[in-house]
Length: 143
Ligand code: CMP
Image (cartoon, rainbow, N blue to C red; front, side, top):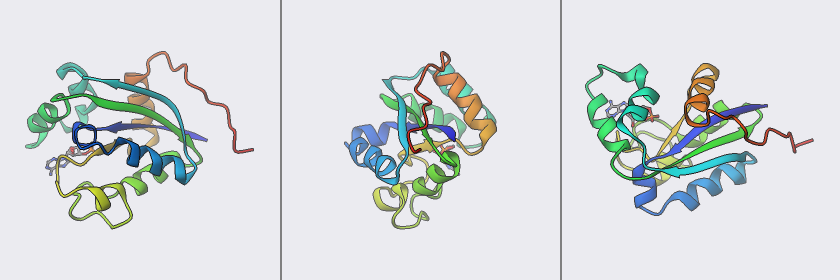
């Protein structure tokens, strides 16, 4: 079993798409084990996206994710990191396949509704950042 870190970004919250997006993760068979709605600070956002520091889109990305509240989730399931990435779709929503969250619900290359950890290392780092107590339910209920 794996746990991954998902963020529903400001555009998902503002457009009222959180229910639809959460429903997609749940219908797939993944389990939401932690959820927190918050306005994130510039420092938190820069830490979360530290691998992108220096890239041309970095400042705009930080402005965007701190512009209004987000929902931060821990999502658990078998191969949850890969499964969530597939459900989310390609970074540029215009290129994302129909059937994916970005492919069905978005048109923007940067304001792309959802973030999902891209590797086990990122998931561990990001889960520690957003849920430092780590006290979410890790019971395997699929058995
Ligand atoms: P996310 O999956 O959260 O990971 C990094 C984020 O940076 C990405 O989604 C986009 O929001 C943003 N991003 C990545 N590439 C670009 C780009 N070329 N132009 C603008 N924003 C980008």
